Length: 203
Image (cartoon, rainbow, N blue to C red; front, side, top):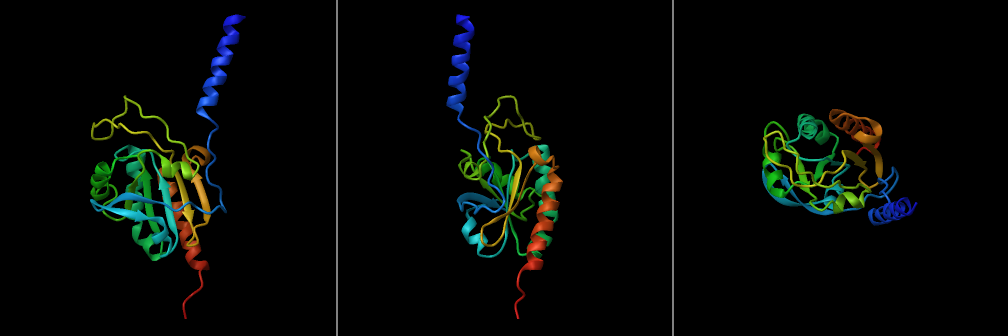
């Protein structure tokens, strides 16, 4: 009895320390703006969401890690469709906990980002937390497709489509919506094209 009592106390203490799970930013919310080190075609720069929104809608997609199979497929698909996103006036920004050095390589890799869109580094998961996403702890047994160890935590694959006012008009995740990496891209594209169709035409 005493042992089960103390076990219950320890479990409750552990739950208190972990805190409540974050809730992903809902549709209709105003997305937090952020600046972050990012890479485009292998060159590091400071990405500003505020500046990107001044140009039009933005697709902010969070992904677990560069050079892992699902993320590679997602990046390749975004790159393959970048011209259609451009035509819809939309900016794509990928966010992961990868170091900027890994992202410099990933962003320039012709098989993946191919220099077509930027990827930002969120090593502590601070940007993800602002969007209601929880980064899982790094694991010592994970290697990427090149055989290198992945030493950072993982962000859940989640996509937010923002209109030019910074409002979340769509949100979907692989865990909750059972979407493939490719479906994250195709859904995002359809939404930004709908936003373009609804936007007032210049005279």
